[in-house]
Image (cartoon, rainbow, N blue to C red; front, side):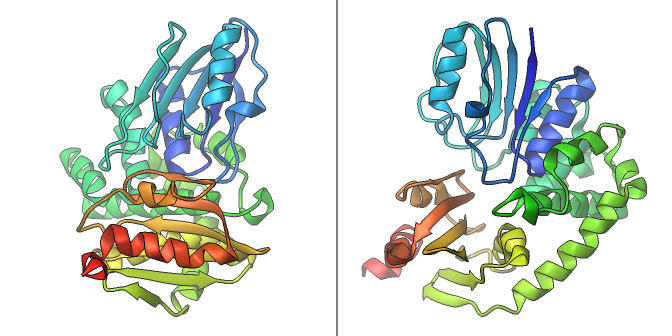
Amino acid sequence: MRFYDIFNGDADGLCALHQLRLADPRAGTLITGVKRDIALLARVTPESGDELTVLDVSLDVNRQALLGALQIGARVRYFDHHFAGEIPRHGLLEAHIDTSATVCTSLIVDRHLRGRHRAWAIVAAFGDNLLAQAYSAAAERGLRHAEIETLRELGECLNYNAYGGFIEDLHFHPAELYRRLQGFVDPLEFARHAPEFRALQAAYAEDLERALRTPVEMIGKVCAAVFLPDEKWSRRVNGVLANELARRHPQRAHAVLTHRDGGFSVSLRAPQSGTPGIHQVARQFPNGNGRAAAAGIEFLPQGEITSLFRALREAYDVTAAL
């Protein structure tokens, strides 16, 4: 019997797995990658009796690999909050999937563990830009303001580290960052003592400052877009910039488009003070997926920009139809 831990390399995936392994320590093969690398189950060739734990990657995207693993006789535990489509019914599948706009995978794991390691779920919620949920959970624990802000910054930095077109764009491989987390039950202790956090703090601030100098283009009364160059720094910061713009302008939907050969990778955010469902916009395009509040398109051809902007206006700018 072999064990596999398969997880998104962002804050949510890292903290979800960390919570589970704090509660149930177990050595397994780690399968992860950059944030947009979500077709992870296909990397595993399981055998009957193997156990797979899958966290924070869309079941719909991994459906064929999941069905194949179940057919072989592998046992799968699946925790996620992204669009899933129809969830298979199978005796070897334990699915914990909630696609509500107000949860992330780590909050689902926290629910499953009945709050045993909630501080790490708070870190993940901050990283996933679920600020109301994160602040509420932190207040319930009686944390001081400075401690809460440290957890917020840690979540944002862990999330930032996962953005990039290639592993080489990242400051730390997500698997190595997870191994570093393993030594810490308390995320505040990690923040105090881990040099990785300090390195990410400095890099995050530098990349975000550069990105915020990029012009914003309005594509409707409540939709905006930013175009970033094909550079390592911009590939790292595109999701962070989208989150920051969503916080600064909660009434707007946002698209951050990072140049690639012949097109763009796209980070999308729904208005924080309005209707979610940005994943429905993303899913109108090949390689588009996500969740109600935040989504992305892995590759958008140059010629499809007009179609994307039209889809955003139709979804969020009610005046566009008048």
